[in-house]
Image (cartoon, rainbow, N blue to C red; front, side, top):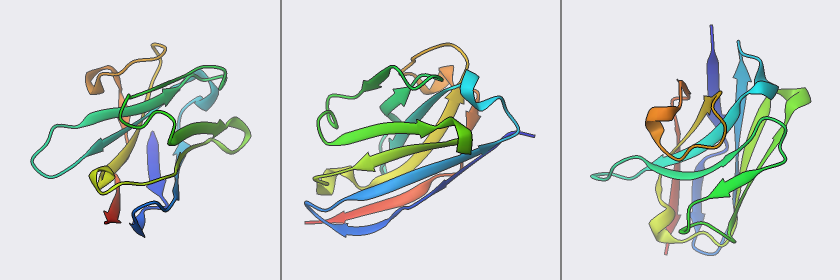
Length: 123
């Protein structure tokens, strides 16, 4: 049984930072690309970034490039999203997801999903 559990969300002032964690179980974690997505009310789920199984390659959406950093610790079966210089437009539910087909930006390419964690940024 595959489970992905996000944590670390909360409320923060604009310009602040948060670190999200995604704990994985029930899969061969080092073989999975891990992606982060977000969804704000009234909007479609959008790609934030992804990291390949080895951790050697990443990809980011233009909207977060230079502010967010994805990392992973395969020994702990955990992926991370470090969010700095947060803006009000970053407010959304953030989801982690896994796939076995390299770096992908489409939600349809991900097989496993967490339930999400809320991030709220006040201006």
